[in-house]
Amino acid sequence: GRNLYRNFITVLGEAISNAWDADAKNVWIQIDRESSVFSIKDDGIGMDAGDFQGKFLKIGYTKRADGGMKTPTQRPYIGAKGIGKLALVSCAKRISVFTRKNGQDYVGGLIDNSGLDEAIKSDLTPDKYPLEGLNYDLIKGLSDGHDNGTIIVFEETKEQIRIR
Image 1 (cartoon, rainbow, N blue to C red):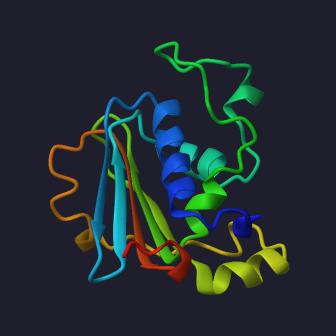
Image 2 (cartoon, one colour; image 1 turned 90 degrees about the horizontal axis):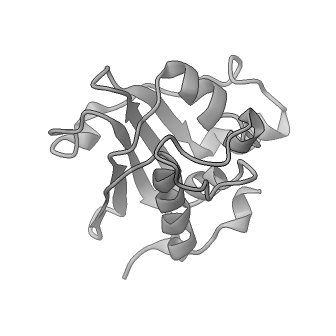
């Protein structure tokens, strides 16, 4: 599934779609060509620990399954199948997700692709494949004034989506 998304534009599109579905008014994209790092930040509703574990990390979770067709501000949901997030984990060796709701502390984790393939092959449940902790140095400056929403940092982007 993760290999379906090899195009950088598709990855950005999925992140923007997720931001739309989270009622974000703004999305910021920052690219550091020298270090092969980029970030996507939105000011959507964000997630708490329960949302992150039960919705974001659950492949196939769709908001529509909860009976909703529109966001709280009445936008029609773009996401339908709950697999677009696979685009986000397909494009870099390490993906850090920082998310917060209403000024709460950030929750999230680091997804390290080096061990993810084996975890998928072994059908490990999240409790048997815990995410690594967050490195807050990655979002210095990005977190300023960011009371709610999500910041995703992509490290060591894969060759096919590097910006040249």
